[in-house]
Length: 611
Ligand SMILES: Nc1ncnc2c1ncn2[C@@H]1O[C@H](COP(=O)(O)OP(=O)(O)OP(=O)(O)O)[C@@H](O)[C@H]1O
Image 1 (cartoon, rainbow, N blue to C red):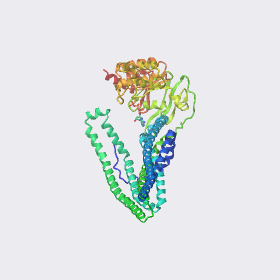
Image 2: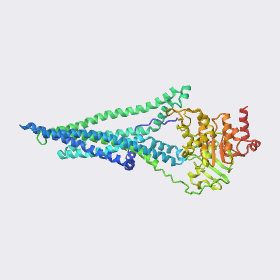
Image 3: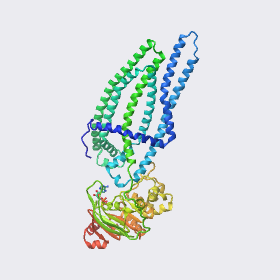
Image 4: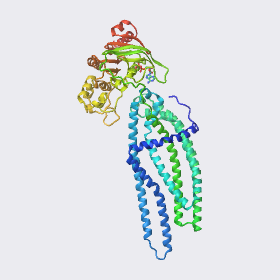
């Protein structure tokens, strides 16, 4: 994996600062989403935070009254402590309430956070499903999706921080009001005490952020190395090829560079943080001395002294906290941008026509001079492809690796559009049909079919998920694909959990998985079947059984089979031989053998291999 030179700390600093502040515009929309997630919880959280924000100043105020009352009582000959005990009782009640409120905030935050993360995950899954495959295969876009998907915890943290920030702000306002009421000059000292640590916070969190962002690619590589180094899927090869040291060294070297840069930054941050903190403490003591002086000269009471020093101390901490949260919020807001960018992707179809699809295919499909390059690539994969698939015909695609066979089916399925040329169904350009309805025409098993770690029943029902409770249909599909043989060997039959990820899961062999996946294609009565290398992992006997059934079942059904096995291919009505994106030849097995070209060569080569 090629890697760029280590990033310096200064790289991209300015733009990041600007970017992170500008990302704050997403906060209102973010709150609107949270509000829509659960209005009651949101209101509950806001109410608790409001109470939590004003409690500190009230508690300090009661503390002041208590001290003043003690001093009054000590000066009296016959003291009456009823009032004093009432105040102490109130203070006790407020402290208990304060604890209750902070727990209620924690509770509402975590419930709201969980509910919001469920909502966003559902939104991301639904959106991904609406987006064109071509976009999902674009690496830049994929990064965005990755960030939108993986930043769920950061969004929940952002929610707590942002709500906490509003609470801090109200708290600060009430404490400032208290200071202004007694000693307005203290505000100047307060500002002086907070500026150094504010600058420190802004400067270093930007540095930290730049470092982390600048190293995104390397951190992804580290994640990847961690994954291949400690994972059941790679363990066999890592052990067998003795790759542990190779992976460990690569991981260590890369993480060491990041560690060194981070260490430098952390030491600088701690050292300067200490110096700035001393400055802050100095101004606090300046304020303290000032207040003591005012008490001694009789301008303010001892109770007011405790109130003012308490309020000053609390304010300093609240302000520091406010600024550090603020930088964290603006950083997380950048991930919000990724999320909203993803959710806002326009999914307006290029073709809005909704021509009714034919009840039955009468003529078939026709590729007319189709050319194709994948997006963002100049490499022409298909070069002037023209051929017909007649209704009810079984057509096989043959060709060497990378010839373009799978790409042809992706165009037929409208995952991509031809760069030029057109594909017709019964004489109508396939783009004119409603895409979802058109795609529902097909029963497809892809070469890289997905092994869902669900039960066997679910794995098969995926072919037509609304039939998940139709046991008869599922069993029928399993019989046709030979998956019933697999099921009969499983302890829990159709309810057996597959894969190793979840408890009591059973892993299948490659061929067994293929039989299960193949059953999906039989789940619905699709008008057109496409099987891309459906039997590559099956043994010879299973392959021939599967194909006998397939041919029997799809007697008059239009179907396309892609296979490297000529014993399979030769059973097709017609065979299309692709070579480097061009149709080299097309015809029956017999005709192509007589043609003595690539097909005949490849067929003979394979036949020799079996001798
Ligand atoms: N998503 C993609 N983006 C860019 N190029 C791609 C993409 N998918 C495939 N290709 C390229 O298109 C070419 C044709 O690939 P395709 O999968 O159609 O070949 P194939 O004939 O099915 O091969 P195989 O027999 O190995 O399955 C290859 O050169 C491949 O690298």
